[in-house]
Image (cartoon, rainbow, N blue to C red):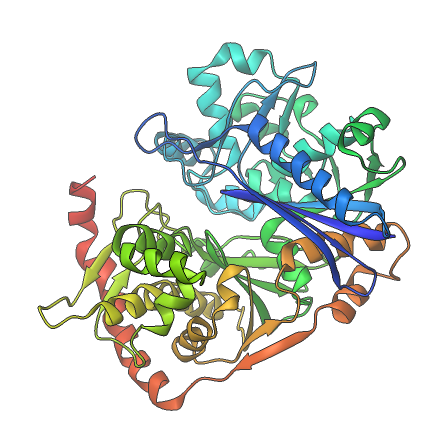
Length: 502
């Protein structure tokens, strides 16, 4: 029997089946488009996402006939919300994290509750990304849709509901709504009311790794899954991939390099102090029991390298296709070998920690007529890590020091990129043997809930093996330390100009 982890991301969904030893048996992936019906908007078609998840599951079934799935759990992006009718149909697209239409509501929440109270209750610094503000947008712009709503579902809840008929979510994904009391582990009725909904439309709450239900017989038959597959509460993608990377204790952090670049550090207690709040660093439930996580992230992650590929590397794309080679491998093989003097500010979408600025802009500084494409390629990869280092210094000052990073996601495949990260961060960067940490974390939760493992923590330690370690190069680290001081000046010196350009 196998365990299945499903990951629902911003630009695609993936399903991976594992045996109980943590080895990959089969995987499937589907990519879906982001929609931007208005400037600053970003939506996903929830019907398309559900169809693609089912398609992935069907492919997994065909590949695992000898090891049929016995249990599954979902890892997913946070904040995105789908309004669902009584009959299970979707009333809306989902508004994803970096959609900026909710920015005008920030002041209303601040005036009504104050930033300190919001953070003290939810562990989330007030920002436009959260579900509560998205619901307020529906209340003020599409009230008829909100009135028809039976369930307010994130993508974990949506998949659980479609598979079992049970609307249930876990504490970590609930924590990304800014409507969940992280200490009481319950919905906050006052925040819900201000957003425009009641707790009756919110999914049932449970810790990660809790049995949510059994797959519906008709749904199982449609997909081809065995009857009786158990559906288990998963987690928000960041704590889920942190679990899949084996991070369950302080001092080590998972570093997800995907559409978003995000460092996820684990702690035995909630860090809800003033330093966390003033630097916009959130703290909420880990997928590992009795632990919490803090996030340092930037929304312009690997998507910036994809932008560079599409806009600046058409020749490399052609050559990669002709040689059947990965275009990113080709780009990095021709990139500069040493740190560049260029500085890239990766604010190509809304920013994350510490600025939370929807109106900032990306920038490339230091260009001259002598600048080469090789330098520009490396600089694109350097910029995101400079941004992460800035956030990690702030987290350290708030009591959350990290000594080692375990990198997950597609970026972990590049030795070149991993060495850059080790050099800029000045710390060892480890790459797990199983690259699909988010799906592995979900599979661990599924297995622990159905008796495959004695506990979630023990399973994470057993299955998350390290394949490679990148130590900082002392000379590169010295250069990056100097240039990081330059980097920290870019945003404050140009903030007002960026805002004028909006």
